[in-house]
Length: 475
Image (cartoon, rainbow, N blue to C red; front, side, top):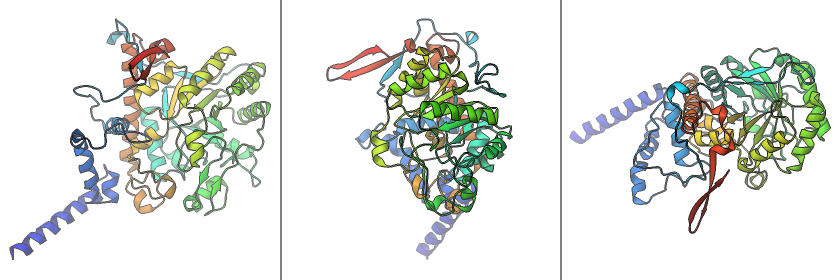
């Protein structure tokens, strides 16, 4: 009898936990996997103690280690990021603190930057005033779920940042949150293509009428698959996504390796000018650096033909992420952001385009140290995709291309998507962006600056490590 009563009480307790987990909105894993999901959180909580006994260290995971991901998780949840006893990080660079750092009354918010010019050749009718140096990089609806898109859009509004659509086109979920939007056009021109796959000025003009759409972005390549178009498995091409993109439902969505109408620097400039003329809004180009000589050819053309000059460039490092990519491209093609960004900034300076072209950096820049480094190296802005995925609750399950993401971020299964509450996650998205800005400002103040707009290469030092120890060198 006692055994039966114990079993009944145990089952009742499990049932109560199940009901609680399904009803709560703060943890997607528990909503999607009630009861058993607690095992993950137990292991996560006790991991710090177990690692004292030489289990997996915090810096061993790839592509993002536990130290990086934990920083994002805590920031998104509004939990303190203070550390005790000493740092576990092994930095490749450090910032040069000033002997007399800025006092609170000497600091100011980042002043913002305007993208696009209002007069002269290459002018647009509606330049964009960006009020945050940290923003959301392109993630297509289809690659991520509608709940994830809704949460990012609402979070962007709360944080005062922009959100890029990714190459999958503009959906109602991008618009419903109310945040600023960058409409990205990949090589297949999803959302702005005609029946033959060519650019449709009518559709381009229609998208430009949305006041939330602030800029347009021509995507030449992204870090995870430079030289290869976007890949969306057919299982993720629903009827709704197919309608947005202008493609058949249920079939693999594979973009061309490049824009069929852009095969030279001159054609790239002509395309940029065309999009700006039709939309009246700033136009940028996202690319991955391969041959540095291309930069001089391109920027020389920009200087000679200002009407064909992009308003910004987004430099994506070869370590960038995606939902699906061939392993050789993800692993071995494209310069990493640590090499690419300084090259682009130097080329812009050589051609006298610093005030004309803004630089956005992306590629695993998800923590304040990486963001501040990019600003020191010449970036005007930093964009992140995977950082914001972590803020939504992504656990790096590496299931992005399967549609079976356990957190609902990249899922297609309605049951898994239902676990992601857009209202709750929008708050986390905003907290993450705000914490990045706050801690980048802390670094700037330590370097004696009033705000991050004063960062230069002189404020950071690379650390070279060897068998005999390490030495500091100028960045």
